[in-house]
Image (cartoon, rainbow, N blue to C red; front, side):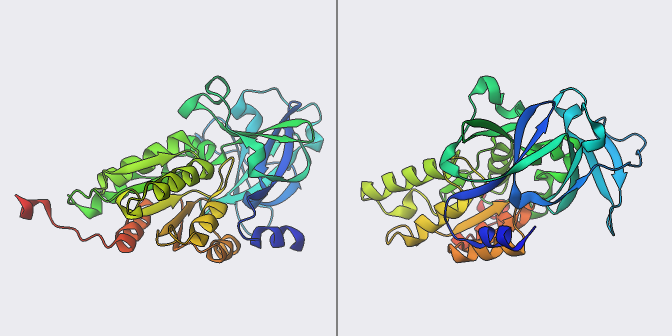
Length: 313
């Protein structure tokens, strides 16, 4: 990406993002530019035996082998009318590189997260849906796809593995209240189940930064000690209405709420995004799907001390 795009990524807490618009069979979709390395004309690929049906194969544009996903096939849409003009969107998230085969790239738009709405259940499909949001921009409706979910469905080992927590053993229960903020029903369920397995049984889940901010303001207004309701915030970055960076900025600028440790848990954490997280005051940042590292960070930030269950009997 060019310098202007990089500068946008480094701006702190603006609650804005850049979306790359692309089409498949005439339908308009979008991806966060923070996930995109580059775009290239489609190229012949090498098929892989016994691979997932939506994987076209692999190709090596430079010094790295990249898996190519046929996004049209995954979405159940029609073939390209001009395959010689098709595009590969090269992405990096969850510490993995993928190429998504699309039919055209329309351009890049900079919009506010407040212009992104969560689709209703009919469109979204709950945990089975593949749209995380609908963006409104200059009269167009752009479906933002859940690329993490797509990749996890293709290869479940790329997602959060609750079994990674087995090394922790049978930990003592903790009633310390945690706030988890994530717009993906599937991923947030896995995160909550993982924290529960690690002993954290008192969790509250919000779908986006705006809901979380409203909840925190309500707690502050109650007059109760803040940490009696929330002792740590674990938040995604990409979310409609308000993103995780803006939420973190608001928390850290509030005299009463700034005592709360905030962990950014996102597939987007790289060197540039880490700088942005530091600028808004995040206490820690960890990339999905490193769930064991997340639990270790929560332990450290809230001062959790594990007492073996056997010693409590």
